[in-house]
Image (cartoon, one colour):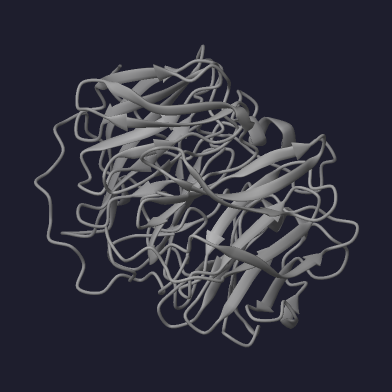
Length: 442
């Protein structure tokens, strides 16, 4: 771990740099900007890939859609109105809004280009939608009307909200933006983590593969995690000239003026990271994968490495983390779960007979929903007891799916599974839910 180095300043009055202790926690915001449901790429501000809806033990396929000629790179987001939001590279529209009951298109938009597939649509409590491509961040109203469009440098791997309700995101070249969500105006000048870094959106040489893996050619390749109580935010970053990637912590605050403060840097991620960091329910630690073979736990206040748990493969996505500290790594190897025991991690269970091909999203009631291999290029969605690994249900995903890129929930317990081949499958509960628990939906 090293002290934070000076950032390029667009305006000295807008940014304060410090390598100091984390400030005392502030009270939670009176009203979170996030809409109810799975409103962000990884469910919430903390990137948990967990939603406190009662999980269903039995599912059936309700409908499926295929976006011909395109792919999907991230899971869908959902709202309280029964809508499912999907980004795709398919010709024509690149943002689709679907009816959760039928999968039919409510509206779609070509106001963002195909690079919008690098993000999931972010939904606020007023029903507005925020999505960027490789040229601009765009806001839509609930009927698909463009409300504003703000040019950006680089493309975003999904945005989040600050505790004050502004949009905050880091583009792949390491540029931090904070925008008003009602107007798109900059709250402070963009912060350049790599001063002078540029990006040409018209260039055919785009670092798509590097951003999928979080390697050196894509410095900021994942979604930031935000602590809504303190304004701290965390992200993976491969600095120019560094030997490997690390995790950074900063803080956004507005008293007395809007500013970003650099807190700490931990350079503990060999090979880079294809993992958005997960913040625990109490805000005290973070979980993140490296590109070799391990899950890391890092102290959110100091950046100190707490433990490293080898899982045996380079996980290609974020782990799912429950409020109880049960962690299920993303696919690339056998399905397994580990538990945070303070100064070390414990293997709860591992099943070498089930090849995990997904982000094994968790729900209330101690249930997870991993997609596992059925045959070469074919997968099933399963329902798993997270404490024992017992399989409770299995539903085939029809056809060739290769691997899934996100499994998300609706507030009614429906499950949405997106695949790299441009398919989305909706599964609905067929039996009573397992019961509520953990954190409540917003």
